Length: 347
Image 1: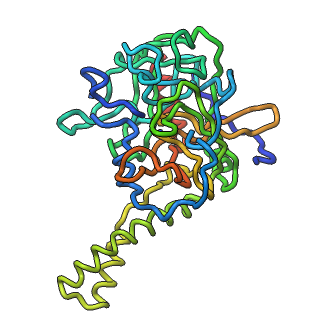
Image 2 (image 1 turned 135 degrees about the horizontal axis):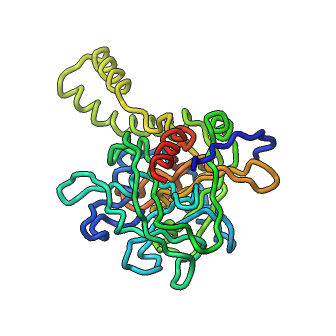
């Protein structure tokens, strides 16, 4: 069976908390890797002033039955409790879950990245509440990580889980876009919704799924904000170094421009940027791997444009920046061929 990539006419378009040690013999770092994403996007320009709109950061509790493709990745053997949840995912076919590669590929105690044993994971489907007696807890038969993903870098942050069976509770699958539709969905200002059970106020693990309406933001603008913030921090050390080595102003400027030109772009073409200009609504630790969806018609058709990948860390590189203006999401449209190849080869 092939995964249906969707191209439709559009009109009026309006982050893991476990460590590898929790999985027994599985590989130790948070799947959401906030410290590393903090390095990636550290010291961003001052976030928006004013009160947060609420809390996936921000948003509200999802109604029962809403977002029926959303699933929770759970540590096997810990039951159906919020503490067992470490990432999100989405059902794209009856036995296939789309998630983030960093949710299933972590550091071992020696600092080497490797895949988690799929037998250490279960998927909770068919419920918006992580509590005993809710939903259907399903074993994972296999996991497939995109081969271009490198641990800790977050580019190509996408993976598939094959379930041992289809859910035995009500659920729906969600479609992903082809390249043409992906371009339309990524237009700045398009309304998106992020869902999950990520950490909320005070680092609490919620039972109830939350949702937040945000919007697509220009990738270039997000990158510019990140690069300017990095440059502001780096410039202080660079000025000291230039003075120490006795560089002329002209040589120092040339060296600085060379340094900046070699800096990698934080949000690549394989990522999309979504959030709000005001801040306070975005993904948080535990939402990783979950879907970013766009409503494309009045009949309630949603398309999954992104997979929750990385966001800005809080103070000291820990937890989440609750006033962050945006998070980065893996751009699903870039991976249709790979997804179909994996699914076709593993019926």
